[in-house]
Image 1 (cartoon, rainbow, N blue to C red):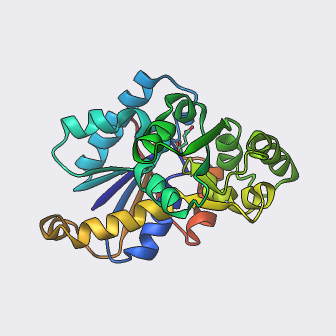
Image 2 (image 1 turned 90 degrees about the horizontal axis):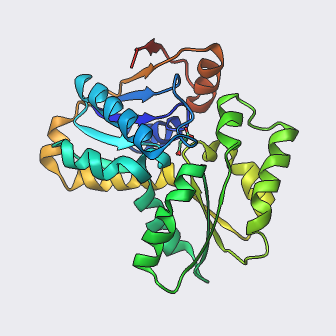
Length: 261
Ligand code: DGL
């Protein structure tokens, strides 16, 4: 199974693209809904949660892990890779690679949670690969709760997105990375507010392509992954709202199981 975790709903954008790109591969998803959002928690706390989530997914049969959360990816990838002897993927690097191939003027915008933006990880990784790049970032702490609440197209959400993108307008960015897996659910609003000349990089698409090519080139891992086209969904707190929004994202009825972390 491919194990995927996030603080809540956001990682389902990764599940959605994985189901499209690798439909036969079984997925086990864990959304840490009882402890969401991660973006406003300390580094140590998010690392601790990431260990617990990974343990759980391994216990459920995962042979490959995707950290479908930028916040956890930015602080916990290293620690998890040190401890576990199985492939662990994060969502930041593939998004950066796609952004660097998309940009023409090397002015790249990044939006994410406070923890991700404060970690400076996007800027560091982009500058390592392309020192002449300019990175403009802005934390958007209200967007995760709005998505978790299912407020995907409310006027209030549009207004808040506009406000968050305001500092990036006027910087002539031609590429904008959605540095949070919740944000693809607001992609149309974000595209509208930032302008259609700006290419939006959706990390859920970037990571699914990376996994696809990794699996194609790693026959031994491929063999270890079950392929019945089945997905299982676990959450640390079940709410009707989560169920509703999750089904909207995946465009199918899903069965949620409650686990206590
Ligand atoms: N989807 C998570 C991310 O990509 C949201 C983090 C949060 O829970 O604040 O960062």
